[in-house]
Image (cartoon, rainbow, N blue to C red; front, side):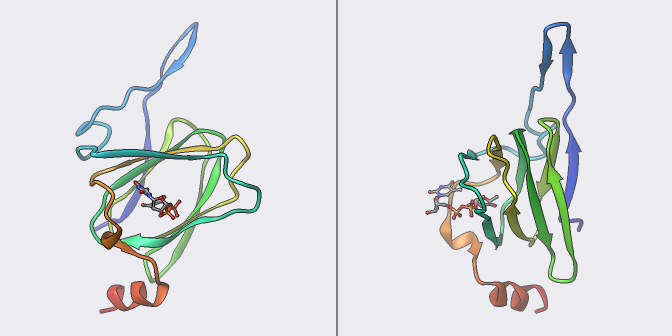
Length: 133
Ligand code: T46
């Protein structure tokens, strides 16, 4: 199963500017149970450094940008979330890190489950052990 992919949110634009509408099951491919956002990140701070056992998430920078590192245990990919219409879907066992937040970054995350600390794998060796069996 592909564990991450980019989603282009359709922009509804007119002479006044732009609007993006997100509906579950069509644009967001799961029922959203939780929304959180990360903002006012201090300079030089990185976040994440964990994987999830059973969680689907869509994340988008509605303002500013940040760099996301994704690691499936075999290879690592870096990508920038730098547009309100460019979202990232993560639905598998993926180690994620967020770096290089711009001062104006507001990273919005839509999640398929309520917050559950037991769903987190916060130790990289544990992550590798699970991925490689
Ligand atoms: C993820 C990345 C992209 C809550 O109480 N409820 C919540 O819904 C969340 C997300 C966090 N928290 C608490 C848990 C910690 O005490 O807020 C504190 C900071 O959470 P954390 O260190 O996990 O934050 P990040 O930025 O490292 O990771 C977050 C999400 O936790 C995670 O699921 O994928 O953003």
